[in-house]
Length: 407
Image 1 (cartoon, rainbow, N blue to C red):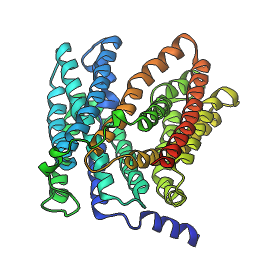
Image 2: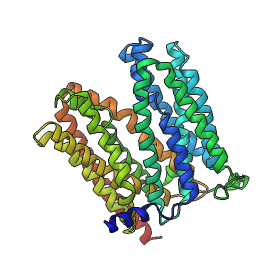
Image 3: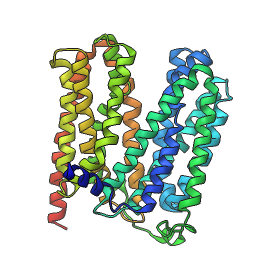
């Protein structure tokens, strides 16, 4: 028992105050995230659009997310992560409120795209900030702390959002907008360059750099992004096709599905920081990414080969959660390891784009495969893609070794 207490104490030890503040900002922001999970319901139930029209609006959000990753990375390197985060939160907050007032379909599509650009431009800046406030020794834990805040906030937001949606869909947009603005205000109060020494002020010296290194010319990093996209394609099935499979094929009730799905965020909140603390001392990022890819493959294949209903669902969620905790923090660490102070935003932006692409094509192609070929085929496809991801990580490891050899 004493060892466990010490393990958890050490897991949270040594993290800078700025990192804690940044995670609190993320917690407030994600606790107010209610629009995205209920967007399809809002469009079909409140605005009475067809499912296909609703899908078009969601697709606009996905395209905006990809654009936001690119734009946010560029702006972060030009103006600094602090200013991009504040601008993205403030403008995104206002845009959420405006979006809730729109009824015209073309306007909904356009404003949803702009909202997603603003929303996702926050991510590269936020990743750059985490790297700035962390050290090489605790970087993986700082990214995990941020994930902890996201998961807690998302859980709170989804729970409250479900209750709010029963009474007033438009209120979701107001809460989301106000939480964005509140997060921006907290950011300015505690992490502005004038109030926190760990936040660098914008310097025009950055503009004078001519060759800072581009992620789009970094072959090793491009291979890494391809693997991240494969991994995240499987990850996004967790929030799209998996609950439908649990309902239709395993005949689980909605409350049971909700309880099983909630295990993911709960386990991450309880275990990930201690697990990452234990693993990060071993300095084997590639091995953990590889293990995470294989765990993800095993989780989806298990849906085809294991017997049972609820027990099979629980097993799959547990293994997916293990895959997340093992792989994602070390993916973030590898991403930062390829950067310098002048190009970190663009590298973070391309990382965001990889996840955003998977967020667009994962649910859409997953539901298409399940609808036309069946869930069994879908789980085999996802499992094979995860195996390819594992093989890609092995290739990546060899490329990095050769790079270091000839450096």
